[in-house]
Structure formats: structure tokens, C-alpha cells
Image (cartoon, rainbow, N blue to C red; front, side, top):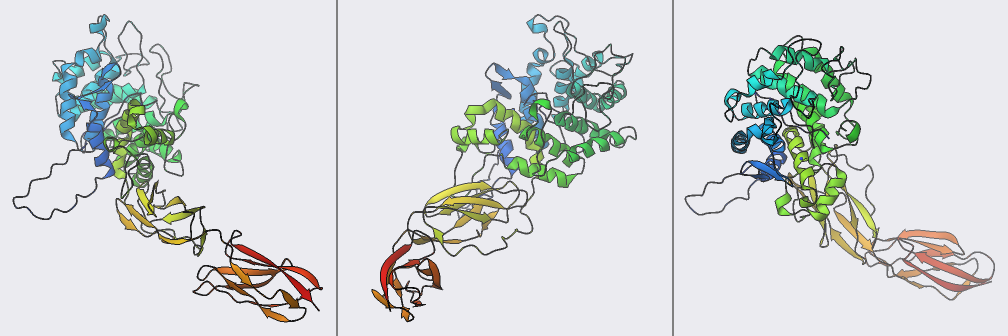
Amino acid sequence: MSSSCVRRTGALLLVTALVTGGLAVATPTPAIAGPVAAPAPLTPAAAGARWLSGQLTDGLVVGEWGPDHGLSIDVALALDAVGSGAAVQGVADAVAAEVASYVSGEAFGDEGSAYAGATAKAAVLALAADRDPRRFGGRDLVAELESVTTDSGPATGRIVDRSTFGDYANTLGQAYAVRALEAARSSEAVAATAYLLDQQCAAGFFRLELGTVEARDQTCDGAPDAEADTDVTALAVLSLLPQRDDEDVRPHLTSALDWLRRNQRGDGSFGGGVATEAANANSTGLAGWALGEAGRTKAAARAAGWVRGLQLAHTGACAPYRAGDLGAIAYDVAGLDTVTASGVAELRDQVRRASAQALPALTWAPGRVDAFPVPPMAPPRFHRAGTRVSVRLGPLAPGEPVCVTMAGTRRQVRADQAGAATALIKLPARTATYAVRAVAPSGTLKPVPSRLRTLAATSPVLRVGARLTRGRTVQVRVRGLAAREPALLRFRGTVVARGTSNAAGRWTPRVRVTGKAGQARLVVRGAFADRTRSVTVRVVR
């Protein structure tokens, strides 16, 4: 699963690693005590940043096997993208103190080793933290990166791992290298950029795996097994955007962005590569981030709306998530179900990586839609007690949570891309009228319907003479219905009257007696089949 992190306004764009993963708001103390307004809810990006900041321990993300420097950098770059500078500095300090063990395996017996992708990624972190990558943790990361960039042959510009374990460099590391070398004005930047552009296929996507250093054809189109990868393509775009004015780079960016847009699904989501084809927050977040930075803001907003639908947030009276988990972003719908039921701890590593990769896209999370798609027909006047009923909610922001309450029950749902949501509510098993209320972070809204009248099972009272003369018209008296309840009367299986009860729940239809003499059944039914009463009468001549 691919992973990410890339961007500083005006100068810095970042890319992130080939793995899937707050803002602290200080309020000044008033000089004079007085009424204090409730704080405005955090934006989706701010809520995500606050949670992600909380995953750092002394500047590092600590996993099952100890500090994870790569993921820590991912977190820092995501926080930098949404403006949480203090956390970025903390990660830079912590990584700088241990950078030797991240960019090389010498501490573990891999003498003379240099890991190209990690070196490039650490250099990008230095740039994000406004540090000099030539003096980061006592190392010249630019020179070290230049030393693992191929200088001649078909693979000129390609980064290569120097290690006894082999070469695992890929297009993600190449993208990091391009960003770092170009920002440092390295003489290797042009060749590294040209090699990165060769990893783009004619269709517009960038492949993940690089050709071997010895291969004569180093291009994506020259590799028959090249596979499309959303994450790699988005990260390559983010890395190349600082060079968008270069006439050699511009058409590659356009082609990649067009490919991303063509592969965005109707709900705004993206799948990743071959192993992550299903819609997920990592790929959607990266693609939305790249599209937004490139000015394709409409597509970015649709991606951000989908990502917001996977962010842990509650509102109003609803609290489906643990307080410490709010702001985190689940990887997919199944992951959201898991963390809703068991908390983030159940999938902490996955959620950390998903949040680090998806967070920057929330910068483009849209507000409330302009118009709410109102259902074309009026809702039913009555609902059968004990059943479920759909309540339509809007207008909302795409992906925004909304809390629906009725008769002491609470249910939280999310808006779709049209800014509408549907809540399926279980009605109490009694006759009553209930008010439906809905609250979202963007304010209250009126549900459709806003009142639900429920009718429980009953047997209305039906009065008519026991002997009915054929050919005569008789009056039937019904009581025990709800006020203004629709009703019908059947005689010998045929509907002979339809009407509505009065405010007191009474109905008095008139019926002409037809058919042969003998016993007959007269049945009154209210709004539902379980609100029925029948009597047997005798028809006489």
C-alpha cells in the first residue's frame, strides 16, 4: 500500500512513502470574567491535525517495533501541509538526532550502505522544517543523495540503493529525490527529473517499480508489465509541481492530472495500485491533494468530501467514537466500522498511515451545498409503529456527519456528495407523534419529515345493525381510529367506501347493501393492515 506526504505553501511540496498510517488551539484567558461563547468546531483538517500530532512521542511515531522514522516523517509532512509547524519542528529534531540509522544500515552491519529513498525523504523533511539539508543531523543529505544518483548510461538520473541487501529504490524515492535535489539546486536535479518523467506511461500514470540499472530501456512504456498506480502518480505530480513552468515538465503534469481525473469515481474516491484497487483514504487523499495543489479544485473537493466521510467526528447528542480518537481517518468503510465498534487501538497503525496520507486533502473539504435535493413527493402522513422509516437530511457539506435524534434515540450518518444524507430510524411500537431533530457541525437543519406520526396495531370499534336489508343504504359507525386517519370499508370482499376519520378518530360511511341474502362480512381497515376490525352481519330480503 502506498503512502504519502508533501507540501509547503509557495515553496515546498512533499511526497510520501510506500506504506499505508492536532492542531493545539490556545485560547487566551479573558481579563474579566464573563459569558464565553462556545468554541467553533474544528475544521476537518484541524481536527485531523490535532489527532495526528497526538500520535507523536518525543517527535516520533512509536510502533510495535519501536520508533518508525519513515512514518514520523510522513506525519510531519502532512502536518506541515495544513500549517502545524510546531509538530514539524519536533519531528525534525527527533529524526535529525537519529538520521544516520535511517539513511544507512551501517549501524546494523551494512558497511558503506546508503538508502536512496530514505535519504531523499529525510532531505525533504529538512526542507519542510526550514533546515539546511546539507547540515541535517550532522550529515550532508544532498551530497549523499547525489552519490547514489546514476551519472551515466541509460539509467542516468536514477537513484540506486547502495546496500548488501540489494537495490529497492522505486519511483516514490525518485520523486523525493527530484524534490530535494531541485530545491537544493543540485547539478543532479535535471537528470533526476528527466528520469522521473521517463517513469510515466503514455496513458498518463506513473509506475511504481523502476527498471534495473542495467536495462537498456528505462521507460514506463518500455516495460510491458508496468501497472497503473494512483498513489505514485499523485506523489510524482506533487514532486514536479514546483517545476510546472518548465516546458518539458508541464505536459507531463497535465497528462498525469488528466489521468487522475479520469480515474476518480463517481463518489469522489480513488483506488490505489494492483493490491489496493478498492476505494481507500490513502489513495483518495493523495490524489485529492495533488489535484488541489494543481488547481483542479472541483475534483479535489470531491475527493476531500469522500475522505471526510471516513474521519472520526461526532456532533450534537451523538458520540459514536471515543473522545481520544476524534479527527483520525479510517482507511476504508470496513476500517471505519471496526474503529466505531472497538476504537482506533484495534487498527492504530493502519489509521495512522491513512491519516498521514489523507489529511492534506481535507484542505479542500467543501462547505454546505447550495441547494438541498428535496424529495419530489410529500412524506406519508402516518407510519406503522415498530417499523423503520427513512429521514432525508440536508443541506450538508459532502461527508459531513449529522446527528439525528427522535424519542430518545440517536443516530449519526454522513452526507453524500450532493450534500444529502438518509437516516434509517426505528420507530417506537406505540401510537404517538415524534419530533425529529438534526444537528451537524455546520448548524441545525430541518429533516424531511420533521414529525413522525406512528400508529400501533389496534382493532377499531365497528357498529352496524346485525340484520341488513338488501337494497337499502345503511350507516356504519367506526371509532378508535387516529385523528385524520385514512380508512376503508369492505363488504363481501369489495371496497365499498373510503374516507378519513375526524379529529376524534370517528368515521361514519354509508353503504348500500347488495348481494344475495345470507351471512356477510363487513371489514373496516385503518392506515395499516394491523388496524382492522370485522363483523358478521345477515343480509335479508
